Image (cartoon, rainbow, N blue to C red; front, side):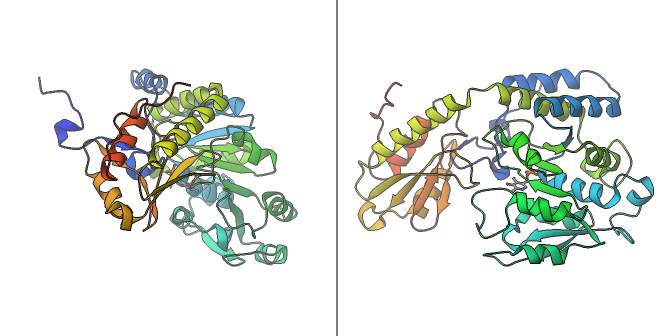
Length: 383
Ligand SMILES: *Cc1c(COP(=O)(O)O)cnc(C)c1O
């Protein structure tokens, strides 16, 4: 028997993730019920059309939406949304993508909403039409951009985006007056859990979420929620059909894993989690503020605009003898590696929501060691 596989057997170090649910760090960690659901799904064959429909119906029921679909990540959900809106699920139209000749393929986006993931729009044959500028957008700019060649309006959610863009309600009002669907990229907009239905309640035709961020489902999953006819059109474009989005297929294991993750997420005591994160941030802050040259302060909301606290650790290199960048680099060289979110020369951010039990101590000890003092004696006060 070969030795059991592990990251260590491959010479790869584990990472303690105090940064964020970053794809580059593996997204999130799956709870047992998610892994159990994947293991169950892996044990037998199944009719994939039937399973996708049944899982979609259950996801819709749980999230208070008309319909649901499991995609291979939120970015794949973006590509599928374009395909669905351009083709409306018509097989003849589907066969014309990604060229899209004669089909509406324009995707209207606020300039201030441009994100690295919008390349997925182009992957599916969508052409991005940008409105407004980095700071502001006017309703007349949206009106002027909409026409016969418009497939959809893509609206990106997050309180970290520029406030001068049109809000969702106004975007929906203008687009729907012309019969054009609005798709919301809400990939990282959990918590709060209510967002699973808030965007579609506010008029969005589809809302997209990552399965592998706060939901802690399989990393290669996404959730597409919304109007039944558009979800049908999404389904018509995807696997197991041998059509364009066959290249973004999702397995039976991912489908069951995401369903288990959504069920679990909706049953969580979210206020208790928020309170625990606040307590950790307050504790880290008190400990790190004892160190000469270190200024720690709670930061809210987080980098994705989620209502979760982080800690900003400011480093005055003249007093600590090391720069913030040095500390970030040294933490990454630990075993296990420790990932924090760099903030240039000023410092870095650490977050509790991606940590396993006990890792909050490991993060504090390692930072304390880098900044001139080991804080091993620093015990977290009992709550
Ligand atoms: C993370 C993210 C995505 C990509 O999500 P995946 O599930 O990793 O494909 C898309 N859009 C936004 C705004 C995101 O934050």
